[in-house]
Image (tube, rainbow, N blue to C red):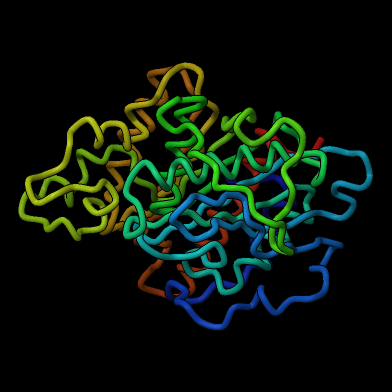
Length: 342
């Protein structure tokens, strides 16, 4: 993949604050914001998109460009899916970026509706719960399209690590009944954090996307070192995600959870980015998945960053900043080409 060309992607990336290490849980810079972001972007934190009986309400943070839902125009949608080993993380953090909501707002200012979604962790419910949740968020956004000025024909899924896995799985499993909507929760009074569902209902909306970006994602779970290690305990992150027991993992479930098993000629274009020195997810995962996509005649672009470990962390902080910003710029240029504002 050559140098980036679209000014919007480069501009957003250049302004993104990046630290030397993965950002940990700390002060929440988004929940305290009470004014619009720069560029006329409006942030809507903690919007409930799904309530499953017995579980916490599932929420997303929404970033709306100026005029969205009010000027009669429709805009493409980017759905961001955070990482964290399927067992942690959150929609307001990404790798070493220091203020992820600000980054997402900067992307929204380019003309996108941006949603950063939460999902059920493996300690709450094993696969396919997380994948179902992300698909539910996509359906919810489409069902509420008129409220937010959403173009239902232009959706991109983008994630990193476990979120990259989920983005790839969502992209490769369009309309798969295995990921159908969960039974809805009983009706309850509306609250300030609940946005009404639009006409047609969530269940009838499509869960398909028209572009996928995955950063250091997992695509073939059966070939991951943690899966091949037969001595790994059930508490190991991937086994916990799969719901493996002490007697092992169900082979059909492992296959169903692997994006590579869902590849077919109807899949959308993919951008896959990985660090050559990744010691959490081997770069071979990207190579194998890219080959499968190409064999199915799916448009796939890849890039491997030298000197970058998982989460774009490098030995030198300046390399972490450089790779993080380049990955972001590549991502936005790819999305611009695939579904971007017209």
